[in-house]
Length: 176
Image (cartoon, rainbow, N blue to C red; front, side, top):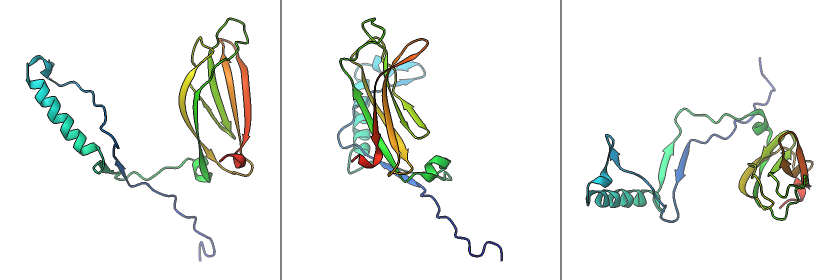
């Protein structure tokens, strides 16, 4: 009959629930208002309400408690690239110092570009500095760890062009 001898591809993993909890007391900032009136205008009341809300949220958010939820009718939709991936590469871009402005203005507008196959990611551009801080997190999909190569480039963003300040090529198989 139809389909005999054909292997059925395995179903992709599906996330159906989540659990979020803090390990320390979170810093909570909020403003209490009702109908445009702020509770902070009522002497003594804001402190009591503020304390009650903070205590309730703390007991709900900090381990061993947490927020639990279920995704209803939300099957995981993978892109074709995600369906082919065998892993993920996480990159954290912190900062740079001592960058040299190729235009000799004294400062540059640096960013970091990351490329892995067809995947291109970029940090924000930090303007007018030779010591940028990005603190950017990037995640790339690994399709073939034996042949995938990650290219990193520090660029200077100008109005009409991008100057390369430095670059690095890393083979995924050599990363640990």
